[in-house]
Length: 233
Image (cartoon, rainbow, N blue to C red; front, side, top):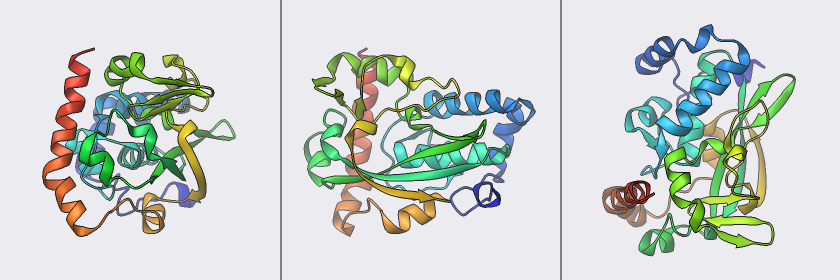
């Protein structure tokens, strides 16, 4: 289990801001279930769903930005859990970008690869590895878009959601797997000890020109749009 508790470049849980947060919330003092639950909901709802300009941000940087998508939320979630002694690992996938329609629009959708690199965190609890994918959409965002999801034979799609049903209970941590995008998975690329190891092989970084456009212009417009969606719920 030592590899699943290590601090890494991206999982910088000894950063002063992360240690301050852990201390203020008294997470390390909780029992195993409660510490996982409280950290899960912190990353789910207090770090709102949004698109960072890249995946390779440190956990402390994601915390400072205050928003994230699957890969950046996963980095922060892993760091916080490891910081209180809960073993975590990354499960990597590729997902169909069509699931992102509604959240990604226009040029941002066109620039996205057909298959997007995707991760969820797995935490070791009660002798099992538990998937924490439900951490991606914050409650406010999910409540705003759930009525707009497209019904398909196997579930509901759109706005960065791909779930079997629209019940918000699927996103709640009760000691079992949580999912929010799993129906869009096209490829399972395996288990990794850290985000760095996954991103080294499966990065979403586009060409330098596309990266420049997304970082300087498109991501900012996109996140403003997501906030408008929340405000219209």
